[in-house]
Length: 418
Image 1: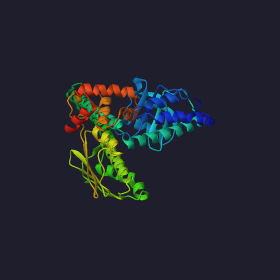
Image 2: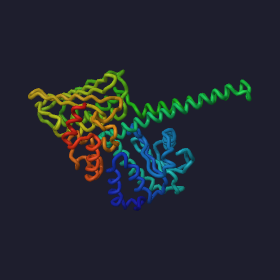
Image 3: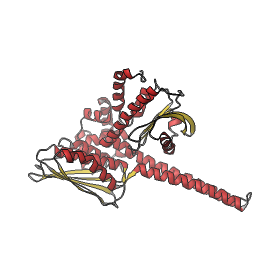
Image 4: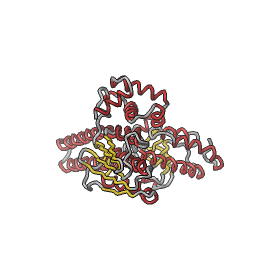
C-alpha cells in the first residue's frame, strides 16, 4: 500500500472501509495493520471521549499499551492542540517518539516508536483524512449503542471500579510514607514537615486528577444526557413532520453511567424512528425520570395503537436494554396509540436472573441478550461481527450453562426471571 501518493486513493478507500466496518473492540488493531506498512510503529493508541467505557483503544506491544495512562494521553492531546505532530513524549511510562493526529471529534490517534524523523507532508495529510473518517465512524458506532458495545462498556465500568480500588491502595501507601517521615528522627522538624507537605501535595494532585478524569469519562449528568437526546432528534422534529414533546428529568437527578446514557439515547432514537415510520402517528411524548436506582423512560405516540414487542425496529432496542439488565414493556390501545416503558438500572448486575448466568463469558452474555430479543444466528453474527458458526458455538454454551434445551425455553425463563 502506498498511502502517501494522492493518486492511490482508489486503493486506499477499500482499506478505510474495512477498518470502519470493524467493531469498536477491533478498530485499533485493524487501523494499526493498515498503517504499519507506511508508518512503522510498535503500538497504536486511540483516545476518544465518545467511548465512556473504554476511552482507550490499543494495539501493539503489551509492554507499551498496558502502561498507557489517560493522564499521558491528555498531555499528548494538549500538545497536539488540534494538529498533527511528530515528537518525543512520555507514553507507557517512558519517553518515546510518536506521531499524533487529532480529529475534529477531539479524538487522537497516536503511533508509538515511529522511525521517521520527518513524515512527508503529503502522508501526514492523508493519514489525517483517514483518521477523521475513522474517528467519525467511532462516534457513530457509539451513538448507535450496539449491544456488544454496551456490554463491553458495562464490563469496563467494573474494571474501572477495580482501578479505583488500586488507587486507594496507592493513597494508603502515601499515608504510610507520611507517617514514616513524621516519625523519623534523622531529620529536623522543619525538614520533616516540608517533606511531609511535598508528599501530601503530590498525592492530592494525583488523586484529584484521576478522580475528576474518571468521573468525566464514566458519568454524564442526566439533564445534559437528555439535552443531547433533544439535539439528536432535532432534525427529525424539524424535517420529519413529527411533533415531539420532551419532558426532561429533574436537574438534580443522579448522574448516568456512560453506557446507560448512550444506550438510553439510542433506545429513544430507535423508538421514535419506529413510531415515525407509522403514517398514523404525528405526535410523540418522550419523558425521562430517575428514581435513584433506575433511569425511567416513557415514550408514547398518538398512532393506531398496533405496536408490539416484536414490531420492526423494537427487537434491537430490546437487546440494548437487556444487556444492561433493564426491562421494556409495550402497551397499545387500538385507536389511542402505544406506550413504551423502559427501566434501566444505574448499577451493573448480572445479565439475567437465569440459573448459571453468572458463569457466562462477556461474549456469551451478548449472544444471550440478542437471543432474548428474538434474533436468529445470522442476525446475531452480523450484530457482533462474528461468523454464524461461532454464534452456534456460543448458543450451545449458553444453553448448556443455563440448563435449557432450546431457544424458546431460554427466552421464556429469561422473561419470567425479570
